[in-house]
Amino acid sequence: MRAAWSPRGLVGVIHLPALPGDPDPRGGFADAEAHALRDAEALAVAGFEALVVENFGSAPFPKGTAGHRLPPHQVAALALVAREVKRVTGLVVGVNCLRNDGVSALGIAAAAALDFVRINVHSGAYVTDQGLIEGEADVTLRYRASLGAPVALLADVLVKHATPLAPLDPRRATEEALDRGRADAVIVTGRGTGHPVSRELLVEVREAAGARHVLIGSGLDEHNAASLAPLADGAIVGTATKVGGDVRAPVDPARAKGLASLLRPLFRA
Image (cartoon, rainbow, N blue to C red):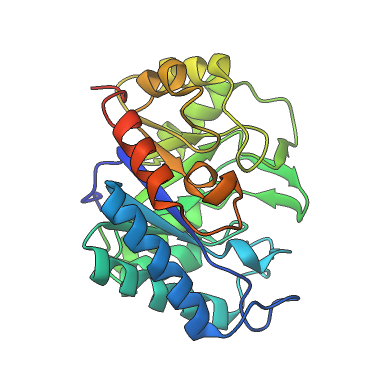
């Protein structure tokens, strides 16, 4: 199944707050949807071309792999919110089921007519704060095919908040995600949320990917844009759009608009 969306451009992040059933819920499901729509509308007005909805506030996360999938209420909430975000904004919309539930993400995307999913560990094995997470490329790709859904699959390379179980260089990790894992694009991040990407790492991934799409997945802002953005086809930008640069704060419309104006002309043609 070929993806309908070509992964590129500026992708804003909708960080859902903690939901009912989480250790520290920040209101009900309706509150979470209102939070998402507020940020989505601000990012759309600012000029972002796509959005990704994440269960960011639901930490600590389940692994997301077989036997440790997201709880049903989170899957339902993500599906409803993402569909409404797409309806209200008219933008390209995707979903990321943290920590690594690609199966639920694809189910949500197919049911809600979304455009892409992000999977943090698509191939290989990584040590994380959730324990050992193994990629499920064989499961997710066959599931996508069975659904007949034209959903792009974006896979992280050497993902943040994780360490490969065995030594793994960026070139090999990129090739395995794109060639053996058949991802539609790869994402490169810093060591954690909001941390900038190493230019050296980005160069290696860019070379390994060739003409295929590479997105920056964390830490892109006005200070490093000129150095990093020309090496990428697009970027997922969350923290830098928020009030005071605080990932848990609402989107700052002025910051978001300024970033969009700065970044969009810089990406690889």
